[in-house]
Image 1 (tube, rainbow, N blue to C red):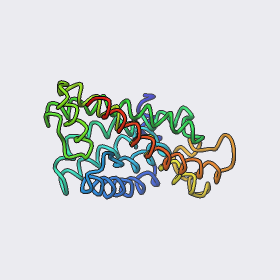
Image 2: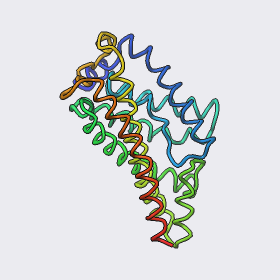
Image 3: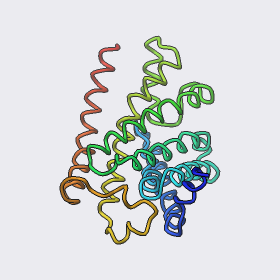
Length: 233
């Protein structure tokens, strides 16, 4: 009964309005990243938005529908990843429910937890459906690791643990900046506005900190990746 009540709490009129918008955000940004062959994904921003202010069940539904619609209409390669998108929405929502979306540094923790979930959930799909090499730009890392003699499972896992933290932390920080930029009167109409009540500092400071953290993540990751690949040659 508690599960049913929890599911019902996630869905009101505002949730149903937001989900299609979030799905569009996921697909548009995700498709751009695929076309540019970038070593990230950024296809879960909408999912995290819904998960945080509506709840984990709504987030899981948003992620699932995003990949199904994306796969059926635009890119069939997106379809098999819907279980990963489901877990991303669910974990992000539960982290927010436990207060991990109230300051920018807690959002980083949320992103890291979501990245671990995504890395584990996506590895079997990448290995058994695609042989480790997918349409994502991150596959160049997998290909490089395979050339160094690693087996496909360890190569895919290593790639996921390299790429997913950057991607999911950046995704969560961007979602945080978007949410905190919205008026509280508007957020109050969603099922879980308490998830985004700022604990310390004002909202503008938190938004700036989140954006700066995203900007710093990218060069740090590029430097770390280049050093790692250089050491494995």
